[in-house]
Length: 148
Image 1: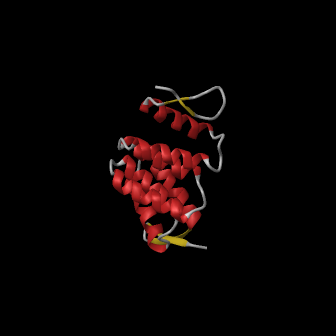
Image 2: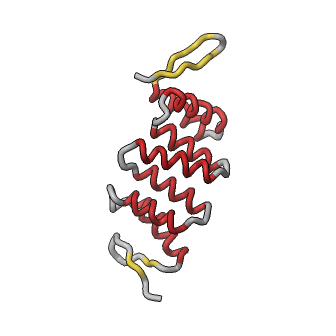
Image 3: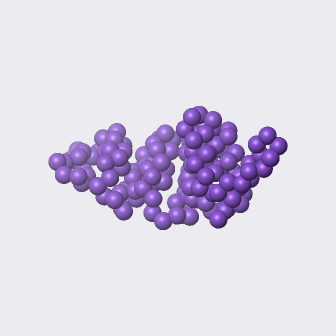
């Protein structure tokens, strides 16, 4: 099992990879982004292809206004893991913030591949397609192009 060391009041504590990710995610959730980023980087030093750490560090980069770095990290996470709807959704969000709508649409479609009925992904895809002014949602769960 992968472990990481943490120092607490002069003593070293070994954490499992899962526990380190859990602690980092908690720091991220409560806004302690520097602590979270430090833990993700420590995980990546030991395991450069850890998809979860890459993805979450990418999300942090996006939140810090670094879209190029976010795209790089989340793409690495996607390459390192089996299909993951959350990774593609978050990459789509990065593209949205950067105004890269075609790439955003492509990511949401990739997210839908393993789970075509995902409400969150359909909502995200619908929002960008409506914003682009070229698509509408029919009464079914599939998307169609509107006539101009």
